[in-house]
Image 1 (cartoon, rainbow, N blue to C red):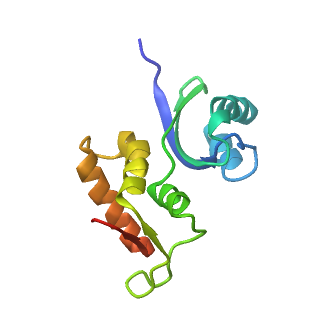
Image 2 (image 1 turned 90 degrees about the vertical axis):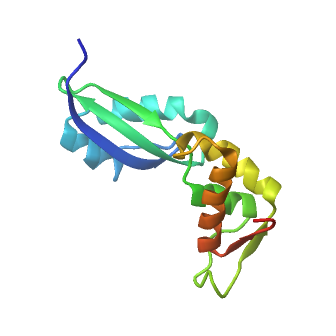
Amino acid sequence: MAKEITKIIKLQINAGAANPSPPVGPALGQAGVNIMAFCKEFNAATQKQAGDLLPTVITVYKDKSFSFITKQPPGSVLLKKAAGIASGSGEPNKKKVATLSKAKLMEVVNTKLPDLNTKDPESAARILAGQARQMGIEVEGM
């Protein structure tokens, strides 16, 4: 029989750098989860992706045990990394901060595709191109 789920917690945590300070500690503490056990397990599982911001879904069960799923970094983080910029534009329609080739966009699409609500790479490219436009990044060929 499956365990009874009591709570689902969604956090964005830097890979390999989970610690008991906010936001991890308070969110898990309220659910009664062993914070240090989660931190050790999360850091071990995400060691290869160190430095990336990972959306994480933590499922807490009735017996206070937990399981977690990490997703790919947010599209905006991947686009900034691909464009080589620190932040998006304050005025995306007027001021462009970078230009991205379609090949670079497709690399981002290949990384982000499992988390998007489409399985078609062209649709995913249009989704991420729209996100890039809203950040002030111009995409060539889109």
